[in-house]
Length: 212
Image (tube, rainbow, N blue to C red):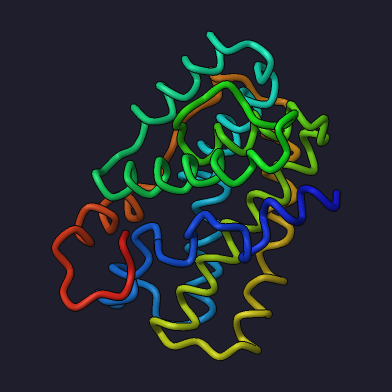
Protein backbone atom coordinates (compact mmCIF):
# COMPACT_ATOMS: atom_id res chain seq x y z
CA UNK A 1 0.00 0.00 0.00
CA UNK A 2 2.83 2.40 0.80
CA UNK A 3 4.36 1.82 -2.64
CA UNK A 4 1.00 2.32 -4.34
CA UNK A 5 0.49 5.60 -2.48
CA UNK A 6 3.90 6.78 -3.65
CA UNK A 7 3.32 5.80 -7.28
CA UNK A 8 -0.06 7.57 -7.48
CA UNK A 9 0.89 10.59 -5.42
CA UNK A 10 0.73 14.01 -7.13
CA UNK A 11 4.45 14.23 -6.32
CA UNK A 12 5.28 11.22 -8.52
CA UNK A 13 6.89 12.71 -11.66
CA UNK A 14 4.41 11.83 -14.39
CA UNK A 15 3.15 15.37 -15.06
CA UNK A 16 -0.54 14.51 -14.61
CA UNK A 17 -1.26 18.06 -13.38
CA UNK A 18 -0.55 19.41 -16.88
CA UNK A 19 -3.35 17.47 -18.59
CA UNK A 20 -7.11 18.09 -18.29
CA UNK A 21 -8.40 15.11 -20.34
CA UNK A 22 -10.62 17.49 -22.31
CA UNK A 23 -12.19 18.98 -19.16
CA UNK A 24 -10.75 22.42 -19.87
CA UNK A 25 -12.73 22.49 -23.13
CA UNK A 26 -15.90 21.37 -21.34
CA UNK A 27 -15.42 24.18 -18.83
CA UNK A 28 -14.74 26.71 -21.59
CA UNK A 29 -17.95 25.85 -23.46
CA UNK A 30 -20.06 25.85 -20.29
CA UNK A 31 -20.80 22.13 -20.08
CA UNK A 32 -19.07 21.86 -16.70
CA UNK A 33 -19.58 25.02 -14.66
CA UNK A 34 -20.09 23.92 -11.05
CA UNK A 35 -19.59 21.08 -8.61
CA UNK A 36 -22.74 19.18 -9.58
CA UNK A 37 -21.77 19.15 -13.24
CA UNK A 38 -18.25 18.07 -12.30
CA UNK A 39 -19.59 15.12 -10.28
CA UNK A 40 -21.65 14.01 -13.27
CA UNK A 41 -18.70 14.46 -15.66
CA UNK A 42 -16.25 12.46 -13.56
CA UNK A 43 -18.79 9.77 -12.67
CA UNK A 44 -19.68 9.29 -16.33
CA UNK A 45 -16.05 8.96 -17.33
CA UNK A 46 -15.28 6.46 -14.59
CA UNK A 47 -18.36 4.30 -15.14
CA UNK A 48 -18.87 4.51 -18.89
CA UNK A 49 -15.99 6.39 -20.52
CA UNK A 50 -12.21 6.54 -20.59
CA UNK A 51 -11.96 5.75 -16.88
CA UNK A 52 -13.69 2.41 -17.46
CA UNK A 53 -11.58 1.65 -20.53
CA UNK A 54 -8.40 2.41 -18.64
CA UNK A 55 -9.53 0.21 -15.74
CA UNK A 56 -10.07 -2.78 -18.04
CA UNK A 57 -6.68 -2.23 -19.68
CA UNK A 58 -5.02 -1.87 -16.27
CA UNK A 59 -6.54 -5.17 -15.14
CA UNK A 60 -5.30 -6.95 -18.25
CA UNK A 61 -1.80 -5.47 -17.90
CA UNK A 62 -1.76 -6.55 -14.26
CA UNK A 63 -2.62 -10.12 -15.31
CA UNK A 64 0.05 -10.39 -18.03
CA UNK A 65 2.76 -8.32 -16.33
CA UNK A 66 5.28 -11.19 -16.49
CA UNK A 67 4.68 -11.92 -20.20
CA UNK A 68 6.46 -9.28 -22.35
CA UNK A 69 4.78 -10.37 -25.57
CA UNK A 70 1.23 -10.17 -24.26
CA UNK A 71 2.02 -7.01 -22.35
CA UNK A 72 3.26 -5.37 -25.53
CA UNK A 73 0.00 -6.32 -27.26
CA UNK A 74 -2.02 -4.71 -24.47
CA UNK A 75 0.08 -1.55 -24.75
CA UNK A 76 -0.51 -1.41 -28.51
CA UNK A 77 -4.25 -1.89 -28.02
CA UNK A 78 -4.41 0.83 -25.39
CA UNK A 79 -2.63 3.29 -27.67
CA UNK A 80 -4.92 2.41 -30.59
CA UNK A 81 -8.01 3.13 -28.48
CA UNK A 82 -7.06 6.77 -27.82
CA UNK A 83 -9.80 8.81 -29.54
CA UNK A 84 -7.76 11.95 -30.29
CA UNK A 85 -4.21 13.19 -30.73
CA UNK A 86 -4.14 14.92 -27.34
CA UNK A 87 -5.56 11.87 -25.55
CA UNK A 88 -2.83 9.73 -27.12
CA UNK A 89 -0.15 12.22 -26.11
CA UNK A 90 -1.61 12.34 -22.57
CA UNK A 91 -1.70 8.60 -21.97
CA UNK A 92 1.66 7.92 -23.62
CA UNK A 93 3.36 10.84 -21.90
CA UNK A 94 2.14 9.90 -18.44
CA UNK A 95 2.70 6.18 -18.94
CA UNK A 96 6.23 6.53 -20.26
CA UNK A 97 7.12 8.97 -17.46
CA UNK A 98 5.70 6.46 -14.97
CA UNK A 99 7.91 3.69 -16.37
CA UNK A 100 10.97 5.90 -16.03
CA UNK A 101 10.15 6.86 -12.45
CA UNK A 102 9.22 3.34 -11.36
CA UNK A 103 12.74 2.22 -12.30
CA UNK A 104 13.65 3.20 -8.74
CA UNK A 105 12.05 -0.18 -7.92
CA UNK A 106 13.84 -2.42 -10.48
CA UNK A 107 11.86 -5.53 -9.61
CA UNK A 108 8.62 -3.71 -10.47
CA UNK A 109 9.75 -2.25 -13.78
CA UNK A 110 7.83 -3.87 -16.68
CA UNK A 111 9.58 -4.91 -19.90
CA UNK A 112 8.34 -1.84 -21.77
CA UNK A 113 10.18 1.18 -23.10
CA UNK A 114 6.99 3.20 -23.50
CA UNK A 115 3.35 2.48 -22.74
CA UNK A 116 -0.01 4.13 -22.16
CA UNK A 117 -0.75 5.15 -18.58
CA UNK A 118 -3.06 2.28 -17.52
CA UNK A 119 -0.74 -0.36 -18.96
CA UNK A 120 2.33 1.08 -17.24
CA UNK A 121 0.54 1.28 -13.89
CA UNK A 122 -1.16 -2.10 -14.18
CA UNK A 123 1.97 -3.96 -15.19
CA UNK A 124 4.06 -2.33 -12.47
CA UNK A 125 1.47 -3.18 -9.84
CA UNK A 126 1.33 -6.75 -11.12
CA UNK A 127 5.07 -7.15 -10.90
CA UNK A 128 5.08 -5.63 -7.41
CA UNK A 129 2.32 -8.01 -6.25
CA UNK A 130 0.02 -5.11 -5.43
CA UNK A 131 -3.55 -6.47 -5.31
CA UNK A 132 -5.55 -5.66 -8.43
CA UNK A 133 -8.49 -4.20 -6.52
CA UNK A 134 -6.26 -1.77 -4.68
CA UNK A 135 -4.49 -0.76 -7.88
CA UNK A 136 -7.77 -0.10 -9.68
CA UNK A 137 -9.34 1.94 -6.88
CA UNK A 138 -6.19 4.01 -6.35
CA UNK A 139 -5.71 4.70 -10.06
CA UNK A 140 -9.32 5.76 -10.61
CA UNK A 141 -9.07 7.93 -7.50
CA UNK A 142 -5.94 9.60 -8.90
CA UNK A 143 -7.74 10.18 -12.21
CA UNK A 144 -10.74 11.78 -10.46
CA UNK A 145 -8.52 13.81 -8.14
CA UNK A 146 -6.61 15.27 -11.07
CA UNK A 147 -9.84 16.33 -12.79
CA UNK A 148 -10.97 18.04 -9.58
CA UNK A 149 -7.60 19.81 -9.48
CA UNK A 150 -8.21 21.01 -13.05
CA UNK A 151 -11.60 22.37 -12.03
CA UNK A 152 -10.12 24.15 -9.02
CA UNK A 153 -7.96 26.14 -11.39
CA UNK A 154 -10.21 26.52 -14.42
CA UNK A 155 -13.80 27.07 -13.21
CA UNK A 156 -12.59 28.11 -10.54
CA UNK A 157 -13.96 25.74 -7.92
CA UNK A 158 -13.32 26.28 -4.23
CA UNK A 159 -11.36 23.69 -2.31
CA UNK A 160 -14.30 22.84 -0.06
CA UNK A 161 -16.44 22.11 -3.10
CA UNK A 162 -13.60 20.09 -4.59
CA UNK A 163 -13.54 17.87 -1.52
CA UNK A 164 -17.32 17.45 -1.76
CA UNK A 165 -16.92 16.31 -5.36
CA UNK A 166 -14.34 13.71 -4.34
CA UNK A 167 -16.69 12.43 -1.64
CA UNK A 168 -19.54 12.21 -4.14
CA UNK A 169 -17.60 10.12 -6.66
CA UNK A 170 -16.34 7.57 -4.11
CA UNK A 171 -19.20 5.10 -4.73
CA UNK A 172 -18.74 5.02 -8.50
CA UNK A 173 -14.97 4.59 -8.11
CA UNK A 174 -15.46 1.63 -5.77
CA UNK A 175 -18.17 0.03 -7.93
CA UNK A 176 -16.18 0.46 -11.13
CA UNK A 177 -13.03 -0.92 -9.52
CA UNK A 178 -14.92 -4.03 -8.43
CA UNK A 179 -16.42 -4.48 -11.90
CA UNK A 180 -13.07 -3.98 -13.63
CA UNK A 181 -11.38 -6.52 -11.36
CA UNK A 182 -13.65 -9.16 -12.95
CA UNK A 183 -13.26 -7.83 -16.49
CA UNK A 184 -11.59 -9.10 -19.66
CA UNK A 185 -10.69 -7.31 -22.88
CA UNK A 186 -14.10 -8.24 -24.29
CA UNK A 187 -15.56 -5.79 -21.77
CA UNK A 188 -13.81 -2.83 -23.38
CA UNK A 189 -16.11 -0.09 -24.60
CA UNK A 190 -16.75 3.59 -24.02
CA UNK A 191 -19.82 5.81 -24.16
CA UNK A 192 -18.06 9.03 -23.15
CA UNK A 193 -18.76 10.82 -26.42
CA UNK A 194 -19.05 14.33 -24.97
CA UNK A 195 -15.67 13.94 -23.30
CA UNK A 196 -14.09 12.56 -26.47
CA UNK A 197 -15.47 15.46 -28.53
CA UNK A 198 -14.25 17.94 -25.92
CA UNK A 199 -10.78 16.38 -26.10
CA UNK A 200 -10.77 16.86 -29.88
CA UNK A 201 -11.98 20.46 -29.61
CA UNK A 202 -9.30 21.28 -27.07
CA UNK A 203 -6.65 20.92 -29.77
CA UNK A 204 -7.55 24.43 -31.00
CA UNK A 205 -8.73 26.03 -27.72
CA UNK A 206 -7.14 29.42 -27.01
CA UNK A 207 -6.17 30.53 -24.47
CA UNK A 208 -5.61 27.39 -22.45
CA UNK A 209 -3.80 26.22 -19.33
CA UNK A 210 -3.51 22.48 -20.04
CA UNK A 211 -1.97 20.22 -22.65
CA UNK A 212 -5.19 18.27 -23.24
